[in-house]
Image 1 (tube, rainbow, N blue to C red):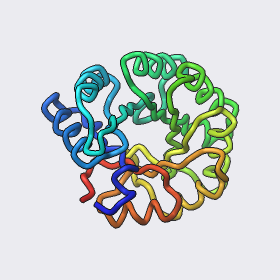
Image 2: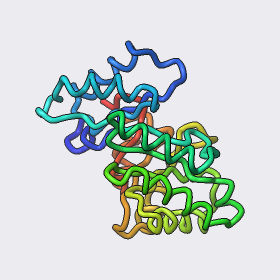
Image 3: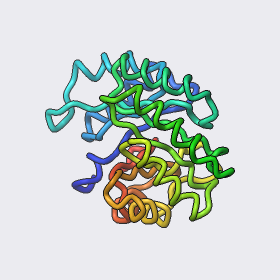
Image 4: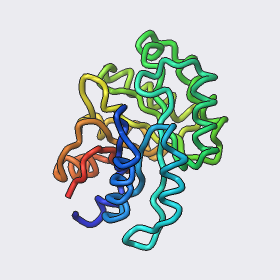
Length: 217
C-alpha cells in the first residue's frame, strides 16, 4: 500500500451477519497494514476493544475503535442517538460516526439537524464525532448547509455516506465538502470506495479519512 493511505483507512465491518471470527479477521488486517481504525457496530465495541488492547500494529501503535450511532438511517430519536453514542464510548469506542437527520435537512429544518448533532456531541465530549450527511440525497446547497450544521454543532468531521444509500462518496462531493469546511472540520469519504485508486483520488480531493470495507492493497 502506498505510503500515507493505510494510516487514513477506517477498516469497516457493519454487516448484520458479522461474527466474532469476522471481527478478529478485521482487526488482524488493521494491525497488519497499520490502518487508522476499525469501524464496527456498537454491540461489537467491547469485544473489539479488548482484542485490540492486547495488540499493537505493525508500526508499534494502537488501532482506534470507531462505531456508529443512528445508523444507517439517522431516524432514531435524538435522545436515543445520544445515549447510544455515550454507551459506545463507555464501552471503549474512540470515535463515533452518527447519521444526520436527512429528512429534516431536506425540509430545511436545520435547527433540528443541528440540535440532533449537538446532543450527541455533548454526550461524547472526549470522543471524535463524525456526522454522516448522506450526500446522495442532498443537492449542492443542502450539502453546503449541512457542513455549516456540522460546524455549528461542534462535530469534528463531516462524512459523505453510510454506504447503505443509493450511492456513496464521489470525488466531486469530497472536494465540495473540503472547500466548504475551510479547515473548521475534517472530511471522511465513505461508500463505494473499492480500490486503492479510489482511495487516492478521494485523498487528493481533500479526504482526511477513508471508510471502506475493502482491504485496499
